Image (cartoon, rainbow over all chains, first blue to last red; front, side):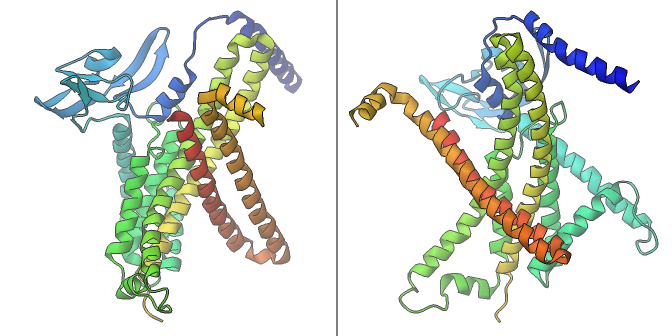
Length: 343
Length: 84
């Protein structure tokens, strides 16, 4: 039975070049368009293509232009159509976004549409709320000291305990106040990273690879660090205990460093997720590029591409977890530094 | 010398892409070097004291994450050089 299995798999792999020889389409594939289309934001959620028809969910467009509020489905402005004076710009500074043309110039109206990223954000938040509330429900109904958690609570407990341990180690006394923020940040980043790797519908929107989202997360850390800093923390920044010739420049360096820390958190998470997605998409696009290089190249590079793509997906799972962990840990370290009391 | 000037004039707009690709390669090289050093010291420390493997592994992951952050600053700049 096993020998038959091996023979079948080998024959199928050897037949790949024959299948490749059949696929002689002369369709120009726009690789950068495909890649940036997958990692960027859009007014519709493109699910798949059946033959020539594209199956997509057209999300609502909510815009306040010079003629007032407009709320409509993005199907009205698909394929370059214009609706109520608004259309999607095809090139230039606002490529891919809704603009209105006033006096020959494209300007961006106030745009709070539900785009793909916003929709994914809402879905991920709902999923996170469900997970957390189910866990809390288990803990309300059972006695922790006599039973071990089952179900969702068993999945969430190690993650939450890990973040609580990090908080206790790095923040010190009032870690209970900051644990909710750290746990939320960790779960949010982890969930969105994982959803970004899933290629089909509820996942596949590259949310944490969007610098606006990571900037807001770092902004929350910045607020948590600086709004609740102790007097000792501010004293160390603004008039530190250093020799007189350093007193003018140390505050500048310290303020700069306090600003750079959230920026580095932003870019670390954004760049890791973006680079991972681009690599996976490039690996899969190799199959389509190789289609016109003949059956031998096509067949062999397809096998290589599938294997590499699988490896990169698994690596992305690891990187998702590590990046969520590093973000939370660095946030807790910064919070701990800001809650330092004098020696 | 003269040849490089000629090549530069001829290649005009593509110099940005060559620079970006070269920068990305340098960033990957630097990241690999840094993370290799961390891996080396972690392996040696775990070999010396196996019971501290957990703490050392955590520290290694964190340091590797920071180094990767720095390498990815460079990758983002290279991407900007290609796209802009």
